[in-house]
Image (cartoon, rainbow, N blue to C red):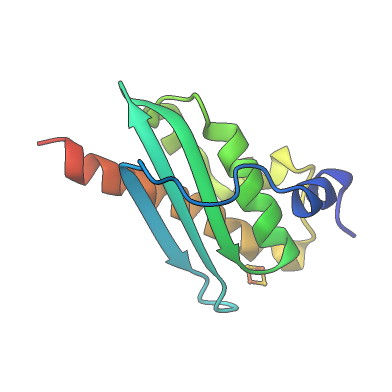
Length: 123
Ligand code: FES
């Protein structure tokens, strides 16, 4: 039911943890299941130089968090803002339909972290 990519990112999540020198942070909860995700970003010259996540959630939530960090590392903020839950699910070769809501968490936490950075660093 889960693709090989989902299983890989669930078993070996990338960029897990905290970023002590983060300058943007987003935390969201999934209203469907109550799971929580936190994403921290380090932005320099409008580029996401580093990103880490912590997720208290299901396998799909952990895999989508991990994938979103890989998708946006080294990207500009404008490019990262284009990421949607669908982009993340497609990058994982799909999610079971019943698990699509889990991918909202990753995209939403990323967008919140970008908003937080912009609020703090742009007049
Ligand atoms: Fe909660 Fe997947 S069941 S994020």
